[in-house]
Image (cartoon, rainbow, N blue to C red; front, side, top):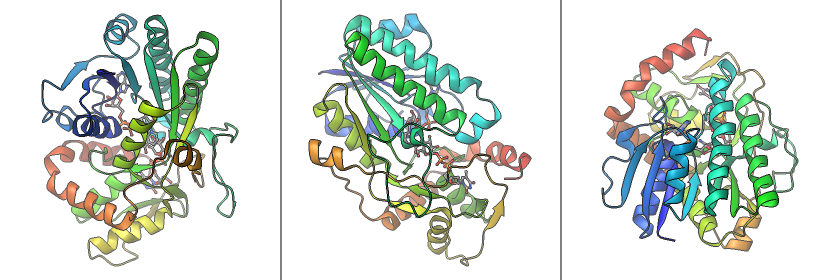
Length: 332
Ligand code: NAD
Ligand code: DAU
């Protein structure tokens, strides 16, 4: 393998993955990204031009996708509409990008027999009760709750069908909630960090007891590269780092980092259909492919992330006011 096409490589996880590839492999990387509101050219603009090229375009553009896929050895597919709250306000771009876009890529990799890795989410499995002793595994039934997770679930099923019916050489990974640098300020952790930098109060949806299973984005990248190199075609791998925390605990840790009082936050309107808890059992990935996370300590990873947002205000500031006014309009 010499060249990789990374869709969505100017977004949060995609840009971190591209950085990981540049630092840890000799691969040459082409990013295909539409540069939606969620993307930033600056997330990859410092990378060496002879290793990383950005093509601005849409994954539903079949001619463009066909041309790019034909000239690469593998595709790693991150591009998606990714935010649940947006999917509740307008599901249409989620159907286009997450379903039609994935279909368009699958048809191209099928025509050119190119290796494909599909990035997906633990949200396809729905949610767990807080006291459920079980976690999600590769055998858990699909039960998505939101338009976002329903379109991701549909895209996973398309990949599985293209493997079985057409022999496409694909793998799938479903990861839990990522945190780290270059994440858009609409998402939970960057939103609260930038609230605190601005001297504002964090905002917790509902009772704040919803649980997410946090993983550092660098660990997600190392897992995806492991699967790309050694994963078995047709298999699904769950990616997680045993990082369950409820939202109040995360806000509490942030308030402590900023030296603020433990109750210095607001409860705001809950998200309709809000999933209660996600939890990943990543035994298969660890035992079959030998992967393990490097960021064991959430508090340290969180403090590093706070420092990144303090040091990179020019990166996030342009999106902050508009994001907050959208949230304010829905009482969040
Ligand atoms: P993001 O919203 O930060 O980035 C998405 C990127 O895709 C952006 O750069 C955007 O411009 C691009 N894009 C959107 N529509 C496109 C289109 N039609 N054509 C080309 N590019 C397009 O998302 P993220 O949080 O980095 O998530 C990346 C992937 O990882 C998604 O598939 C998501 O479902 C999955 N995932 C995310 C998480 C998480 O915690 N954020 C966890 C598990 C899985
Ligand atoms: O589990 C993986 C998923 O994680 C990915 O598939 C999604 O792309 C990604 O956006 C993320 O989805 P969530 O909905 O879990 O992430 P979000 O950052 O939107 O919210 C995390 C939790 O924090 C959730 O319980 C809602 C809550 N929340 C969110 C915001 C923005 C708040 O309490 N306050 C907030 O201001």
